[in-house]
Length: 220
Image 1 (tube, rainbow, N blue to C red):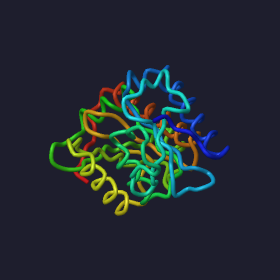
Image 2 (cartoon, rainbow, N blue to C red):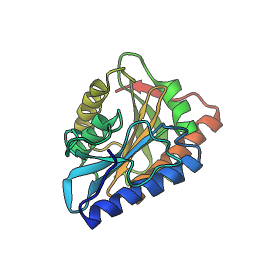
Image 3 (tube, helix red, strand yellow):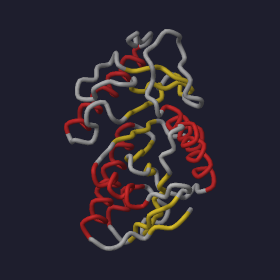
Image 4 (cartoon, rainbow, N blue to C red):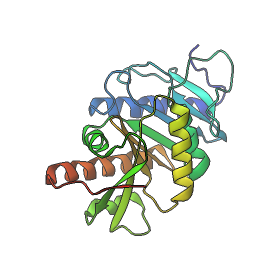
């Protein structure tokens, strides 16, 4: 069942998700049905809208979203379309960081770094330092950061547990993470901020790849 907002805020939020999905699709960061985006409802931040599973992101409409509990990822009203398979990861980010928007895409350079730096059995991290673009991430120390890379377990709930545990233990980390062989997830206080941080992290990953230097990877 397509999403039918009961408030003006819900309608506006759904349209924001549709608009940014098309923008990121046109960049080649959400090919086909890949990727997912969520945003807390401004009139009820305990709930969020997230893109429905299996939707072409280049043709997403305001009706192609699902309302969920922001902290658990469970669908709120019954009878809705199925939410993104990675809703649990969004909920983990919301619970720990207090963010209001989460974006997950398959942007090419971040995905390459995730592929090179992933481990099959543990969270790793990629050292990023000195690049001016680090200032776009809102870090307390903008000279360097360790970008976490999580194993892409078949069980999404297991990934979500890893993410929640890591973010709770590393409060000073960047507002983003990589999934091994998969892509990148970022977050912020608004969709605009999450998108800006996504752009910075993708650009930083591009610089790491183009520098052709060996990635500084460590186990978290």
